[in-house]
Length: 120
Length: 379
Image 1 (tube, each protein chain N blue to C red):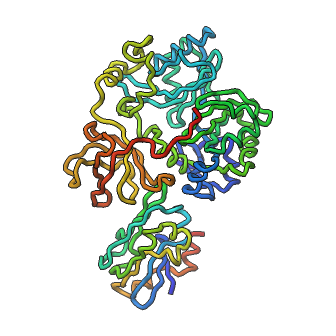
Image 2 (spheres, rainbow over the protein chains, first blue to last red):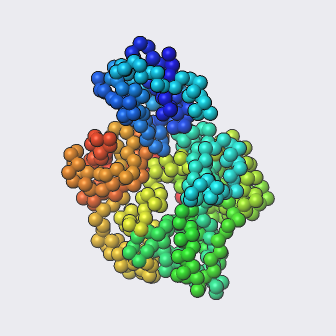
Protein backbone atom coordinates (compact mmCIF):
# COMPACT_ATOMS: atom_id res chain seq x y z
CA UNK A 1 0.00 0.00 0.00
CA UNK A 2 1.47 3.38 -1.05
CA UNK A 3 0.73 6.43 1.13
CA UNK A 4 1.93 10.04 1.26
CA UNK A 5 2.30 12.92 3.69
CA UNK A 6 1.69 16.63 3.14
CA UNK A 7 5.44 17.02 3.93
CA UNK A 8 6.20 15.27 0.60
CA UNK A 9 7.20 11.86 1.86
CA UNK A 10 6.03 8.50 0.53
CA UNK A 11 5.49 5.36 2.60
CA UNK A 12 5.31 1.87 1.14
CA UNK A 13 3.42 -0.03 3.86
CA UNK A 14 4.13 -3.74 4.29
CA UNK A 15 2.47 -5.11 7.44
CA UNK A 16 3.63 -2.87 10.28
CA UNK A 17 6.81 -1.71 8.48
CA UNK A 18 6.88 1.38 6.25
CA UNK A 19 9.64 2.06 3.72
CA UNK A 20 9.99 5.86 3.67
CA UNK A 21 11.38 8.27 1.09
CA UNK A 22 10.77 11.70 -0.37
CA UNK A 23 8.49 12.19 -3.35
CA UNK A 24 9.61 12.98 -6.90
CA UNK A 25 8.04 16.41 -6.41
CA UNK A 26 10.15 17.03 -3.28
CA UNK A 27 13.32 15.78 -4.98
CA UNK A 28 12.70 18.09 -7.93
CA UNK A 29 12.06 21.07 -5.64
CA UNK A 30 15.22 20.42 -3.59
CA UNK A 31 17.42 20.06 -6.68
CA UNK A 32 20.62 18.05 -6.87
CA UNK A 33 21.36 16.56 -3.45
CA UNK A 34 24.98 16.55 -2.31
CA UNK A 35 24.64 15.22 1.25
CA UNK A 36 22.31 12.87 3.12
CA UNK A 37 22.40 12.08 6.83
CA UNK A 38 20.29 9.14 8.02
CA UNK A 39 19.17 8.16 11.54
CA UNK A 40 20.74 5.30 13.50
CA UNK A 41 19.04 1.91 13.26
CA UNK A 42 17.12 1.36 16.51
CA UNK A 43 16.37 5.03 17.10
CA UNK A 44 12.74 5.91 17.86
CA UNK A 45 10.95 8.99 16.62
CA UNK A 46 7.61 10.64 17.14
CA UNK A 47 5.66 11.76 14.12
CA UNK A 48 7.05 15.07 12.88
CA UNK A 49 10.49 14.72 14.52
CA UNK A 50 13.61 15.35 12.38
CA UNK A 51 14.70 11.89 11.23
CA UNK A 52 17.10 12.69 8.37
CA UNK A 53 18.81 15.67 6.75
CA UNK A 54 19.30 16.34 3.05
CA UNK A 55 21.37 19.11 1.54
CA UNK A 56 21.41 20.51 -1.96
CA UNK A 57 24.14 22.85 -3.22
CA UNK A 58 22.03 25.71 -1.89
CA UNK A 59 20.35 24.61 1.33
CA UNK A 60 19.76 22.05 4.06
CA UNK A 61 16.33 20.50 4.69
CA UNK A 62 15.03 18.11 7.32
CA UNK A 63 13.13 14.92 6.54
CA UNK A 64 10.46 14.36 9.17
CA UNK A 65 9.49 11.01 10.60
CA UNK A 66 6.05 10.49 9.02
CA UNK A 67 4.57 8.43 11.90
CA UNK A 68 5.61 7.25 15.39
CA UNK A 69 7.99 4.32 15.14
CA UNK A 70 11.47 2.75 15.27
CA UNK A 71 14.09 2.74 12.51
CA UNK A 72 14.84 -0.87 11.48
CA UNK A 73 16.98 -0.29 8.37
CA UNK A 74 18.56 2.66 6.51
CA UNK A 75 19.62 3.02 2.87
CA UNK A 76 23.38 3.62 3.03
CA UNK A 77 23.46 3.78 -0.78
CA UNK A 78 22.02 7.32 -0.73
CA UNK A 79 24.67 8.43 1.78
CA UNK A 80 27.38 7.20 -0.60
CA UNK A 81 25.60 8.66 -3.65
CA UNK A 82 22.98 11.32 -2.79
CA UNK A 83 22.14 11.72 -6.51
CA UNK A 84 20.15 8.44 -6.26
CA UNK A 85 17.45 10.44 -4.47
CA UNK A 86 17.14 12.71 -7.52
CA UNK A 87 17.36 9.96 -10.14
CA UNK A 88 15.01 7.43 -8.48
CA UNK A 89 13.26 9.09 -5.51
CA UNK A 90 10.48 6.52 -5.18
CA UNK A 91 12.73 3.49 -5.76
CA UNK A 92 16.49 3.17 -5.15
CA UNK A 93 16.41 6.54 -3.38
CA UNK A 94 14.46 5.30 -0.31
CA UNK A 95 15.62 6.61 3.09
CA UNK A 96 14.71 4.23 5.91
CA UNK A 97 12.38 1.50 7.12
CA UNK A 98 10.17 2.36 10.06
CA UNK A 99 8.46 -0.18 12.33
CA UNK A 100 5.20 1.55 13.13
CA UNK A 101 4.17 1.99 16.73
CA UNK A 102 0.49 1.98 15.77
CA UNK A 103 -0.44 0.36 12.46
CA UNK A 104 -3.75 2.25 12.54
CA UNK A 105 -1.89 5.59 12.16
CA UNK A 106 -1.61 4.75 8.46
CA UNK A 107 -5.27 5.66 8.06
CA UNK A 108 -4.43 9.30 8.66
CA UNK A 109 -2.05 9.49 5.67
CA UNK A 110 -2.85 10.71 2.16
CA UNK A 111 -3.48 8.33 -0.70
CA UNK A 112 -1.87 8.95 -4.08
CA UNK A 113 -4.76 10.90 -5.58
CA UNK A 114 -5.03 13.15 -2.52
CA UNK A 115 -1.26 13.84 -2.67
CA UNK A 116 -1.38 14.58 -6.38
CA UNK A 117 -4.17 17.06 -5.72
CA UNK A 118 -2.04 18.69 -3.02
CA UNK A 119 0.89 19.37 -5.34
CA UNK A 120 -1.21 20.22 -8.41
CA UNK B 1 8.72 43.95 -0.03
CA UNK B 2 5.33 42.50 0.89
CA UNK B 3 4.52 40.53 -2.23
CA UNK B 4 5.71 39.36 -5.64
CA UNK B 5 4.06 42.27 -7.43
CA UNK B 6 6.55 44.64 -5.80
CA UNK B 7 9.53 42.84 -7.37
CA UNK B 8 11.43 44.50 -10.18
CA UNK B 9 12.40 42.63 -13.33
CA UNK B 10 15.41 42.79 -15.63
CA UNK B 11 15.24 43.14 -19.45
CA UNK B 12 15.86 39.35 -19.67
CA UNK B 13 12.95 38.36 -17.40
CA UNK B 14 10.74 36.92 -20.15
CA UNK B 15 13.73 35.00 -21.55
CA UNK B 16 14.34 33.38 -18.15
CA UNK B 17 10.71 32.26 -17.99
CA UNK B 18 10.85 30.86 -21.53
CA UNK B 19 14.01 28.91 -20.61
CA UNK B 20 12.15 27.27 -17.69
CA UNK B 21 13.98 29.09 -14.89
CA UNK B 22 12.89 28.81 -11.29
CA UNK B 23 12.55 32.41 -10.15
CA UNK B 24 13.25 33.78 -6.66
CA UNK B 25 13.26 37.26 -5.11
CA UNK B 26 16.82 38.61 -4.86
CA UNK B 27 17.71 42.19 -3.86
CA UNK B 28 14.22 43.32 -4.88
CA UNK B 29 14.33 41.61 -8.30
CA UNK B 30 12.62 38.48 -9.59
CA UNK B 31 15.71 36.50 -10.63
CA UNK B 32 16.50 32.99 -11.93
CA UNK B 33 18.00 30.80 -9.18
CA UNK B 34 18.35 27.85 -11.56
CA UNK B 35 17.30 26.54 -14.96
CA UNK B 36 16.18 22.97 -15.77
CA UNK B 37 19.84 21.84 -15.87
CA UNK B 38 20.04 22.36 -12.08
CA UNK B 39 22.60 24.12 -9.85
CA UNK B 40 25.16 21.29 -9.81
CA UNK B 41 25.33 20.81 -13.60
CA UNK B 42 25.14 24.56 -14.24
CA UNK B 43 28.17 25.03 -12.01
CA UNK B 44 30.17 22.26 -13.69
CA UNK B 45 29.13 23.44 -17.16
CA UNK B 46 30.49 26.93 -16.43
CA UNK B 47 33.87 25.50 -15.38
CA UNK B 48 33.98 23.15 -18.41
CA UNK B 49 32.48 25.32 -21.17
CA UNK B 50 30.59 28.62 -20.74
CA UNK B 51 27.70 29.98 -18.71
CA UNK B 52 25.54 33.02 -19.36
CA UNK B 53 24.36 34.93 -16.27
CA UNK B 54 21.88 37.80 -16.07
CA UNK B 55 23.38 40.34 -13.66
CA UNK B 56 21.27 43.26 -14.84
CA UNK B 57 20.07 43.81 -11.28
CA UNK B 58 23.48 45.28 -10.49
CA UNK B 59 23.89 49.04 -10.64
CA UNK B 60 25.77 50.62 -13.56
CA UNK B 61 26.93 54.22 -13.07
CA UNK B 62 28.97 56.80 -14.87
CA UNK B 63 30.94 59.25 -12.72
CA UNK B 64 32.15 62.28 -14.67
CA UNK B 65 33.88 65.35 -13.26
CA UNK B 66 32.01 68.62 -13.83
CA UNK B 67 35.36 69.95 -15.08
CA UNK B 68 35.36 67.23 -17.76
CA UNK B 69 38.81 66.04 -16.64
CA UNK B 70 39.38 62.37 -15.78
CA UNK B 71 41.87 63.39 -13.08
CA UNK B 72 39.16 65.28 -11.17
CA UNK B 73 36.72 62.34 -11.34
CA UNK B 74 39.48 59.96 -10.22
CA UNK B 75 40.56 62.13 -7.29
CA UNK B 76 36.93 62.58 -6.20
CA UNK B 77 36.33 58.80 -6.20
CA UNK B 78 39.62 58.27 -4.37
CA UNK B 79 38.06 60.20 -1.47
CA UNK B 80 35.55 57.32 -1.11
CA UNK B 81 37.58 54.25 -2.17
CA UNK B 82 41.09 53.17 -1.01
CA UNK B 83 42.11 52.32 -4.57
CA UNK B 84 44.56 53.95 -7.01
CA UNK B 85 42.02 55.33 -9.47
CA UNK B 86 44.17 58.17 -10.79
CA UNK B 87 46.72 55.61 -11.94
CA UNK B 88 44.16 53.53 -13.82
CA UNK B 89 44.98 53.33 -17.54
CA UNK B 90 42.24 54.02 -20.06
CA UNK B 91 40.22 50.84 -20.68
CA UNK B 92 41.37 49.17 -17.47
CA UNK B 93 39.27 47.99 -14.54
CA UNK B 94 39.99 47.63 -10.83
CA UNK B 95 38.17 46.00 -7.92
CA UNK B 96 37.49 48.25 -4.95
CA UNK B 97 35.17 49.05 -2.08
CA UNK B 98 33.40 52.03 -0.57
CA UNK B 99 34.53 52.37 3.03
CA UNK B 100 32.82 54.10 5.95
CA UNK B 101 34.30 56.32 8.66
CA UNK B 102 34.93 53.25 10.86
CA UNK B 103 36.87 51.50 8.12
CA UNK B 104 33.99 49.08 7.41
CA UNK B 105 32.83 48.20 3.90
CA UNK B 106 29.69 49.87 2.50
CA UNK B 107 29.84 47.90 -0.76
CA UNK B 108 32.36 46.36 -3.13
CA UNK B 109 32.48 47.52 -6.74
CA UNK B 110 34.25 47.46 -10.09
CA UNK B 111 35.79 50.71 -11.36
CA UNK B 112 36.72 51.26 -15.00
CA UNK B 113 38.46 54.21 -16.61
CA UNK B 114 36.69 55.10 -19.85
CA UNK B 115 38.42 58.02 -21.51
CA UNK B 116 37.40 61.09 -19.42
CA UNK B 117 35.07 59.30 -16.97
CA UNK B 118 34.59 56.30 -14.69
CA UNK B 119 32.22 53.40 -15.33
CA UNK B 120 31.25 51.82 -12.01
CA UNK B 121 29.34 48.58 -11.30
CA UNK B 122 27.86 48.13 -7.81
CA UNK B 123 25.83 45.44 -6.04
CA UNK B 124 22.06 45.35 -6.57
CA UNK B 125 21.24 45.35 -2.87
CA UNK B 126 23.42 48.40 -2.20
CA UNK B 127 22.90 50.48 -5.31
CA UNK B 128 20.41 53.03 -3.96
CA UNK B 129 22.57 53.62 -0.86
CA UNK B 130 25.77 53.72 -2.95
CA UNK B 131 24.37 56.30 -5.35
CA UNK B 132 23.16 58.48 -2.46
CA UNK B 133 26.56 58.13 -0.74
CA UNK B 134 28.52 59.06 -3.86
CA UNK B 135 26.18 61.97 -4.64
CA UNK B 136 26.42 63.29 -1.08
CA UNK B 137 30.21 63.24 -0.96
CA UNK B 138 31.33 64.15 -4.46
CA UNK B 139 28.14 65.42 -6.13
CA UNK B 140 29.53 68.96 -6.02
CA UNK B 141 32.50 67.94 -8.17
CA UNK B 142 31.02 65.10 -10.24
CA UNK B 143 27.92 64.25 -12.18
CA UNK B 144 26.64 60.75 -11.35
CA UNK B 145 24.62 59.18 -14.13
CA UNK B 146 22.72 55.98 -13.32
CA UNK B 147 22.41 53.78 -16.42
CA UNK B 148 18.87 52.50 -15.81
CA UNK B 149 18.37 51.45 -19.43
CA UNK B 150 21.21 48.96 -19.68
CA UNK B 151 21.31 45.23 -19.07
CA UNK B 152 24.43 43.45 -17.79
CA UNK B 153 25.18 39.86 -18.68
CA UNK B 154 28.17 37.77 -17.71
CA UNK B 155 29.61 35.09 -19.96
CA UNK B 156 31.99 32.95 -17.91
CA UNK B 157 34.06 29.84 -18.49
CA UNK B 158 36.88 28.54 -20.68
CA UNK B 159 34.71 28.64 -23.87
CA UNK B 160 33.40 32.17 -23.24
CA UNK B 161 36.11 33.63 -25.47
CA UNK B 162 35.10 31.51 -28.49
CA UNK B 163 31.39 32.19 -28.00
CA UNK B 164 31.81 35.97 -27.68
CA UNK B 165 34.48 36.20 -30.41
CA UNK B 166 31.86 34.97 -32.89
CA UNK B 167 30.07 38.29 -32.33
CA UNK B 168 33.18 40.51 -32.04
CA UNK B 169 36.57 38.98 -32.79
CA UNK B 170 38.57 41.61 -30.88
CA UNK B 171 37.45 40.27 -27.48
CA UNK B 172 39.95 37.41 -27.82
CA UNK B 173 42.88 39.85 -27.58
CA UNK B 174 41.63 41.44 -24.33
CA UNK B 175 43.46 40.71 -21.09
CA UNK B 176 41.94 40.14 -17.63
CA UNK B 177 40.40 43.44 -16.42
CA UNK B 178 40.55 45.09 -19.85
CA UNK B 179 37.41 46.96 -20.89
CA UNK B 180 36.57 47.64 -24.55
CA UNK B 181 33.78 49.11 -26.56
CA UNK B 182 32.43 46.46 -28.96
CA UNK B 183 29.65 46.19 -31.53
CA UNK B 184 27.86 42.91 -30.82
CA UNK B 185 25.23 42.01 -33.39
CA UNK B 186 25.58 45.67 -34.49
CA UNK B 187 24.75 46.93 -30.99
CA UNK B 188 27.10 49.20 -29.07
CA UNK B 189 28.21 47.35 -25.89
CA UNK B 190 30.84 47.75 -23.19
CA UNK B 191 32.72 44.52 -22.57
CA UNK B 192 35.07 43.77 -19.66
CA UNK B 193 37.20 40.64 -19.35
CA UNK B 194 36.28 39.89 -15.75
CA UNK B 195 33.61 38.22 -13.69
CA UNK B 196 32.63 36.46 -10.51
CA UNK B 197 33.25 32.76 -11.15
CA UNK B 198 37.02 32.25 -10.96
CA UNK B 199 37.02 31.51 -14.69
CA UNK B 200 38.08 33.50 -17.69
CA UNK B 201 35.10 35.37 -19.09
CA UNK B 202 33.39 38.64 -19.78
CA UNK B 203 30.76 41.02 -18.49
CA UNK B 204 28.77 42.81 -21.17
CA UNK B 205 26.80 46.02 -20.65
CA UNK B 206 24.07 46.19 -23.30
CA UNK B 207 21.30 48.72 -24.10
CA UNK B 208 18.21 47.15 -22.48
CA UNK B 209 16.19 46.84 -25.67
CA UNK B 210 18.89 44.66 -27.33
CA UNK B 211 19.69 42.46 -24.31
CA UNK B 212 17.42 39.57 -25.30
CA UNK B 213 18.79 39.53 -28.87
CA UNK B 214 22.37 39.30 -27.71
CA UNK B 215 21.67 36.82 -24.91
CA UNK B 216 19.85 34.59 -27.41
CA UNK B 217 22.70 34.83 -29.92
CA UNK B 218 25.15 33.72 -27.22
CA UNK B 219 22.82 30.93 -26.05
CA UNK B 220 22.70 29.57 -29.62
CA UNK B 221 26.38 28.67 -29.23
CA UNK B 222 26.58 24.95 -28.35
CA UNK B 223 28.98 25.61 -25.45
CA UNK B 224 26.77 28.21 -23.71
CA UNK B 225 24.09 27.40 -21.12
CA UNK B 226 22.05 29.83 -19.01
CA UNK B 227 23.20 29.78 -15.37
CA UNK B 228 21.21 30.91 -12.32
CA UNK B 229 22.07 32.62 -9.06
CA UNK B 230 22.51 29.25 -7.30
CA UNK B 231 25.53 28.27 -9.37
CA UNK B 232 26.76 31.89 -9.42
CA UNK B 233 27.06 31.62 -5.63
CA UNK B 234 28.82 28.22 -5.56
CA UNK B 235 31.21 29.34 -8.34
CA UNK B 236 32.24 32.54 -6.55
CA UNK B 237 32.58 30.70 -3.24
CA UNK B 238 35.00 28.16 -4.76
CA UNK B 239 36.85 31.12 -6.32
CA UNK B 240 37.22 32.68 -2.84
CA UNK B 241 35.34 35.83 -3.89
CA UNK B 242 33.39 37.79 -1.28
CA UNK B 243 29.63 38.17 -1.34
CA UNK B 244 28.63 41.56 0.05
CA UNK B 245 26.29 41.11 3.01
CA UNK B 246 27.76 37.69 3.83
CA UNK B 247 31.55 37.88 3.80
CA UNK B 248 31.98 41.64 3.95
CA UNK B 249 29.83 44.43 5.36
CA UNK B 250 30.13 47.48 7.60
CA UNK B 251 31.34 45.28 10.50
CA UNK B 252 34.35 43.99 8.51
CA UNK B 253 37.36 46.01 7.42
CA UNK B 254 39.10 45.35 4.08
CA UNK B 255 42.17 44.08 5.94
CA UNK B 256 40.19 41.66 8.11
CA UNK B 257 38.61 40.47 4.86
CA UNK B 258 42.02 39.83 3.28
CA UNK B 259 41.43 42.42 0.55
CA UNK B 260 44.66 44.41 1.05
CA UNK B 261 45.75 43.37 -2.47
CA UNK B 262 43.10 45.82 -3.76
CA UNK B 263 44.76 48.78 -1.97
CA UNK B 264 47.60 49.92 -4.20
CA UNK B 265 50.85 51.51 -2.98
CA UNK B 266 49.75 55.04 -3.91
CA UNK B 267 47.05 54.94 -1.22
CA UNK B 268 49.11 53.28 1.52
CA UNK B 269 51.37 54.90 4.12
CA UNK B 270 54.18 56.68 2.28
CA UNK B 271 52.33 56.52 -1.04
CA UNK B 272 51.80 59.46 -3.40
CA UNK B 273 48.18 59.88 -2.24
CA UNK B 274 48.32 58.21 1.16
CA UNK B 275 44.93 57.79 2.88
CA UNK B 276 42.22 60.33 2.23
CA UNK B 277 39.39 57.78 2.17
CA UNK B 278 36.80 57.14 4.91
CA UNK B 279 38.28 54.99 7.68
CA UNK B 280 41.88 55.84 6.69
CA UNK B 281 43.26 55.71 10.24
CA UNK B 282 41.97 52.20 10.92
CA UNK B 283 42.77 50.78 7.51
CA UNK B 284 46.34 52.13 7.35
CA UNK B 285 46.96 51.02 10.94
CA UNK B 286 45.70 47.52 10.12
CA UNK B 287 47.91 47.37 7.02
CA UNK B 288 50.85 48.15 9.31
CA UNK B 289 49.96 46.07 12.37
CA UNK B 290 47.57 43.37 11.17
CA UNK B 291 44.15 42.52 12.57
CA UNK B 292 42.78 40.41 15.39
CA UNK B 293 40.77 38.27 12.96
CA UNK B 294 41.01 37.23 9.31
CA UNK B 295 38.76 35.90 6.58
CA UNK B 296 39.94 32.40 5.69
CA UNK B 297 38.94 29.45 3.52
CA UNK B 298 37.58 26.46 5.41
CA UNK B 299 37.36 22.87 4.27
CA UNK B 300 35.06 20.65 6.35
CA UNK B 301 36.66 17.23 6.80
CA UNK B 302 33.43 15.28 6.38
CA UNK B 303 30.77 15.44 3.68
CA UNK B 304 28.34 17.71 5.51
CA UNK B 305 28.18 21.27 4.13
CA UNK B 306 28.79 23.94 6.77
CA UNK B 307 26.65 27.03 6.23
CA UNK B 308 26.50 30.52 7.75
CA UNK B 309 26.20 31.56 10.52
CA UNK B 310 27.82 28.39 11.97
CA UNK B 311 30.03 29.22 14.99
CA UNK B 312 33.69 28.14 14.90
CA UNK B 313 35.62 26.78 17.88
CA UNK B 314 39.26 26.05 18.68
CA UNK B 315 38.36 22.74 20.30
CA UNK B 316 36.03 19.78 19.74
CA UNK B 317 34.07 20.62 22.90
CA UNK B 318 33.02 24.07 21.77
CA UNK B 319 34.49 25.85 24.81
CA UNK B 320 36.54 28.47 22.92
CA UNK B 321 34.65 30.31 20.19
CA UNK B 322 37.05 31.80 17.62
CA UNK B 323 34.78 32.97 14.82
CA UNK B 324 31.95 32.11 12.45
CA UNK B 325 31.19 30.99 8.91
CA UNK B 326 30.07 33.69 6.45
CA UNK B 327 29.60 31.59 3.28
CA UNK B 328 29.43 27.85 2.90
CA UNK B 329 27.98 25.02 0.92
CA UNK B 330 28.98 22.23 -1.39
CA UNK B 331 31.64 22.93 -4.02
CA UNK B 332 30.77 20.90 -7.12
CA UNK B 333 34.26 21.36 -8.64
CA UNK B 334 36.05 20.93 -5.30
CA UNK B 335 33.86 17.80 -4.91
CA UNK B 336 33.57 18.56 -1.22
CA UNK B 337 31.98 21.06 1.13
CA UNK B 338 33.69 24.46 1.09
CA UNK B 339 33.26 27.52 3.30
CA UNK B 340 34.69 30.91 4.24
CA UNK B 341 34.58 32.66 7.55
CA UNK B 342 36.35 34.87 10.07
CA UNK B 343 38.66 33.39 12.71
CA UNK B 344 41.00 34.91 15.27
CA UNK B 345 44.39 35.50 13.66
CA UNK B 346 45.99 32.91 15.97
CA UNK B 347 43.87 30.27 14.17
CA UNK B 348 44.12 31.70 10.64
CA UNK B 349 47.22 29.85 9.38
CA UNK B 350 46.50 27.31 6.61
CA UNK B 351 46.37 23.80 8.02
CA UNK B 352 44.93 24.86 11.39
CA UNK B 353 42.26 22.40 12.49
CA UNK B 354 39.16 24.00 14.03
CA UNK B 355 35.60 22.86 14.76
CA UNK B 356 31.99 23.75 14.18
CA UNK B 357 28.75 22.43 15.61
CA UNK B 358 26.14 21.03 13.25
CA UNK B 359 22.97 19.39 14.51
CA UNK B 360 24.49 18.78 17.93
CA UNK B 361 27.80 17.29 16.71
CA UNK B 362 31.22 18.96 16.63
CA UNK B 363 32.81 18.49 13.21
CA UNK B 364 36.41 19.36 12.20
CA UNK B 365 37.38 21.84 9.47
CA UNK B 366 40.80 22.79 8.13
CA UNK B 367 41.82 26.38 7.40
CA UNK B 368 42.60 26.30 3.67
CA UNK B 369 44.15 28.84 1.30
CA UNK B 370 41.67 30.52 -1.05
CA UNK B 371 40.60 29.92 -3.76
CA UNK B 372 39.47 26.29 -3.71
CA UNK B 373 39.96 26.04 -7.49
CA UNK B 374 42.71 27.28 -9.80
CA UNK B 375 41.42 30.46 -11.48
CA UNK B 376 41.82 30.68 -15.27
CA UNK B 377 41.98 34.48 -15.63
CA UNK B 378 43.83 35.57 -18.80
CA UNK B 379 46.35 37.92 -17.24
